[in-house]
Length: 122
Image 1 (cartoon, rainbow, N blue to C red):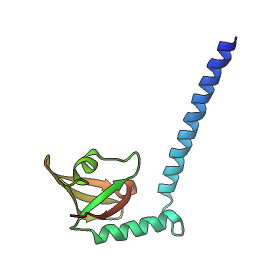
Image 2: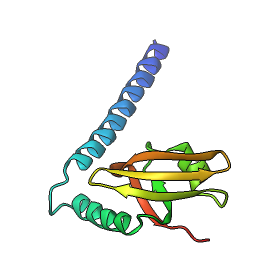
Image 3: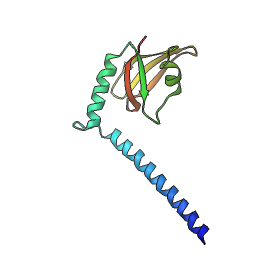
C-alpha cells in the first residue's frame, strides 16, 4: 500500500511540473501578444527595433531567447570565424546573412525571438 501512495505522489508531482511549465509558456505567449503601448514589453520592443534599424548593413552579435535558438547563428555567426549581417528589417522579421566556413546563407528571424543584439567587435 505504501508503494501505491508513492507512485501516486510521483505522478502528482509530474502533473504539477507539467502545469507549471505550461503556465510559464502561456505567460510568454501572452507577453508576446500584448504589444500594446504602455507595457514594458512594448517599450523593450521599441528600443530593440530602434537598435536593429541602426544595425542594417553592419555585422552584429545576436542573442536569441531561450527556446528560439538557431544553431547556425550561435555556432557560426556569433564566432570569430563567421559574421551575422543585418540585411533588412520590418515590424516582425529581420533578414540576416550568415557568412561562415560552412558557406553563406540568408535567414529570416522573428523579432519576438531576439533577446539582444549588439555590434560585433573585430
